[in-house]
Image (cartoon, rainbow, N blue to C red; front, side, top):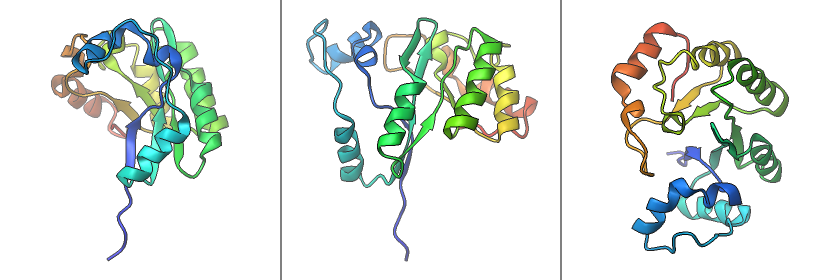
Length: 183
């Protein structure tokens, strides 16, 4: 029997801006951490060590973007991948509310930096994945032959979860884009 390969397809390494964002204050309270105290992000080597401990061979490391801008920038993710190219692969995020720019950015990060897909966290935008803002990105993902990664289910932070319901949203996308890879 061959050795199992474990790939984490939904991970992020926090930046200072990300880890200290107010949306995570409810999670800090639940974890009995001090709310409002600025936290330093862990070293990337610590994330790799945690992957080793869990037996994770490769991680698809994601950027985060919302209407405020980048919380974990695509450039940060590219830097992480450059530091550990055998362990990490990049997943882009783009400004969903700027469709033309979003498509251009997705194309750039996939074609020029080897990113493997696009991640959109719907509750960041409070828009269901059937909103017209997503559709140009679905077309581009299909053309680039990369997956769209969407969050299904409830949020961790105190944000609306409605947009993460798989039915009726994900099934409609699959009907509208039969060649789109959806994670």
